[in-house]
Length: 393
Ligand SMILES: NC(=O)c1ccc[n+]([C@@H]2O[C@H](COP(=O)([O-])OP(=O)(O)OC[C@H]3O[C@@H](n4cnc5c(N)ncnc54)[C@H](O)[C@@H]3O)[C@@H](O)[C@H]2O)c1
Image (tube, rainbow, N blue to C red; front, side, top):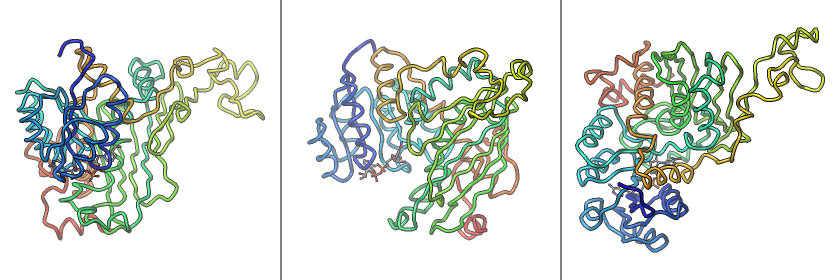
């Protein structure tokens, strides 16, 4: 696609989250909605009435009638791979909702279809796209915030038992996995995006309370290729909800603390105490003074720190933030950075977390070859009774 100001878009799956796609595209002012599709006809018609375009009853009908540049896929995760492959075979690009697919086998099948197509595959991970994460990735990437050593990644959310009332919820077939896949994946993806390739995971996933076939809490300790270490926890049992990533580097602590979306105010960088200045004042570096300031903090010596100095326009993390960047990229003929390939480490992480918990041993990223039992399914294709047992406490 050359430089253009009118990117033709379509949306498949007109349920809850599709609205964020439809509103986000409209907000860019640079898209034309050519079609919407849903297997429930009224849902497609309602979306077309509100946002424009023609309503279709399936992806196949939509592709027979339209030539979209980009198709958003906001259907349940179990249908993503099949729809993505159909769109790619028709030569168009795809934007998959998270989780992009339900297994590494599906991911590789979509990647193969992408290689044979004129289209590309992108994934919604909106928390990579707020100004806070863009700054964090850029500064960490060039070492301006020091070398990451220790990290904490928490998705402590609350879903009551009634959340699992719909028949498909809480099942491997309907959801593909528990909070590790469906909820914690946002924070996990951001952590991996910021820290680079992970190497080894030791995990425990357990079912403590909710009526589900898989876990309602999972915990992992992770070693990264860089030598950094992290703990990751995902819970649906936590009444005061929070989503948090903290990265302690040789230069300071970078932290984002939010629930479902952050703005710049939710990010902090706490520089390492400046030993020289603290010594000149006869204080121990890192000790807080009566005013709460850090004695000899690096920021005091320079008047600023790299995090504060890089502040610019505040863009909250949201679908709109990612769609804006994506449409900018497509309109300019540039590749968009949140590709399917860039999300493979995240799907590998989720796969390894389940595999490690079930096997009771550490799993290396390098172990996840096509002959690994968890390559084809996040439950390892194990018999129901064995699975139920392995998540029981
Ligand atoms: N990025 C986020 O923050 C976020 C938040 C919520 C949901 N999601 C993701 O969005 C996706 C959809 O979730 P939702 O909450 O909107 O679900 P939903 O059930 O509200 O909507 C899904 C829609 O897809 C339709 N559909 C199902 N199969 C189809 C098919 N083969 N072809 C066409 N239409 C089909 C259904 O009829 C329904 O209208 C999931 O992958 C979910 O994980 C992402």
